[in-house]
Each structure stands twice: as C-alpha cells, then as structure tokens.
Amino acid sequence: MIRLHRLGGSEHEFDLNPDLVLTVESTPDTVVTLTTGTKLVVTESPDSVTAAVREWRVGILERALKRTGPQIAEARLRAVDYPAEN
Image (cartoon, rainbow, N blue to C red):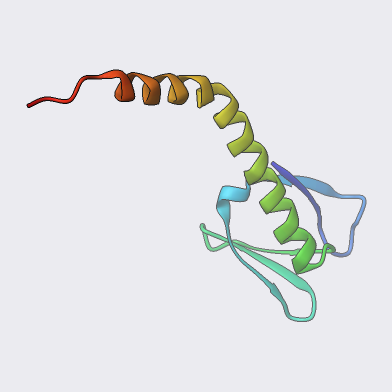
C-alpha cells in the first residue's frame, strides 16, 4: 500500500493499493484514476505518486525473489546436471 493525502485535507491521509492505479495526471492538481473508474485528487505530485508505486513494486519483487531465489538456483543446477539424451 502507498500512503497519499487528499487535496484540501492533507491531514486526511489514506492508503491505496497501487495495483488499482491506472493513470496519474497533473491537471494542474494531481488526479489518480483507478482501474475502477474512481478519480482521486491528491496533494502529492505525479512524480511522487509514480515513485511511491515504483518503490512498492520493487519491494514486492525483492521479497518474492528472496523467497524463491534459492529454489530457482537449485532448479537450474539440477537442469545442468541432467545427462543429455541421445
């Protein structure tokens, strides 16, 4: 989840599932359009929303690779160890 702030009430922060973000536009306010069609106007700049989404995705991928990394390496080693079929 990424934390954003609604425009007009910066004390009203909320967490948003980045998988729902479809577009981020500057009109000049930052408008985040979700896959559901909902539009949110936030205080963050489009660049900071994009950076937050990117950072969240990198974290997800890093954790996934840490969990599967040894298994993938082991599978590769087994594939190399198999004798070639004639």
